[in-house]
Image 1 (cartoon, rainbow, N blue to C red):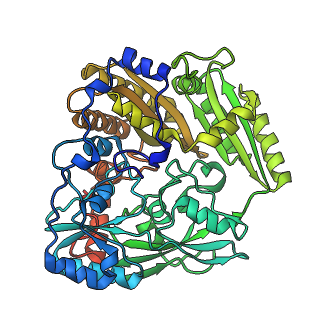
Image 2 (image 1 turned 90 degrees about the vertical axis):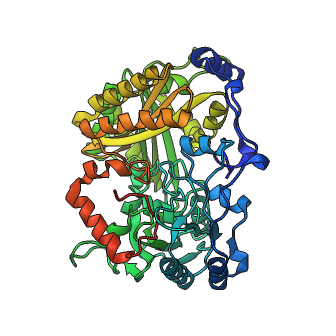
Length: 529
């Protein structure tokens, strides 16, 4: 990916004339307000890795799989949150891991961890680098140096059981690479988060990722049947053969969502399915968000089986349907209200049955069909949204996302509370703001709310967002939301974990950490307060 932006540099987005005018006129900012450093001018903190430690690491992984070069360290200096990207623009000295190691076997990882525990070196497991919560920040804590442990060499389809429909995938495989390997054998995983093109199998497991097809295939943790994890205390093979057991607590769940603080996930055994025979799409509109949310709740609770089910609020609908010539103004053919997407996959007869059953429920709850084309258009561009953030930031806008989940009964109240908090904080900083929201994942008892906010950068934009997000986090926990539904905890949400799981819950996590990583070298400063 781009070192200072999202995705492939060849696919950079540009603002249309209408979008640029909206930024200039509404937010009163422009590219003249932004001073971004060029790559060749970046000053990177010198590596603090001792020569003796570097030589010892090279003996383990090989000279070709170890680097202290600035050009290798800088792309692993953080994730892809807005604060991460703003830091990349800074002319101040930028932090980065002191070295990058690329082990190729479990034994090499075990040896690296043993060496780092002995010599006091922090280790940050690194997959695709798509974290938006500080999950891969090179925090040294009390350690003299910090390694980025890149898992890209764990890139194989280790096995595929076509009868049980289970596959063992290397942790370093990206979403597209994993799907390509499975498709060659007639199978699919079906996990498609917005980070799909760059995030990895190990990262999906370590953060309990949730994909856009979760209505049909579940979250990533629903797909996991087993894990192989290398810890400083040894290697764990978790997940016995067979679909279920009652042999005590399920230890897989200690590592699903553990964000690399307990061990390094190197392989994941996953439920897969045959490549769908059919894919059907239908878009819908609802008169307002409350009506649409009630319709989605009915679908989830009846269980009609869509693969994708999501709903945009009025503001997100209006912006997504804005013409490129006049951003912010709807085209004549664009409906008012709230836009929803449904998709259906599977055997042809089941796809049709699920489609018809879902349509009947949505229609009965106030929905009006827009036909397949708008939903197909959404599917074609669903991974492209993050590209638009880069030119917005480059033109002085402050753009960021956040997410949560709550019960159906609390959904509208929480949405209003978060929206009002975001608007109030941007007003404090002297900026108008646009707050967009959609329901991204649905369950029988509740749903996830995903917010995007667009305002103007004012002064120290990182501090501006940090203060804004802190206020929102307080509201989330006070108003019945979770601190995160699928972005994970990382460094950014860590301070709220005691409120999320309670002091005793934190003590349990600390006890597990002390058992598996007694030296504390694994991903310090993340997850555990």
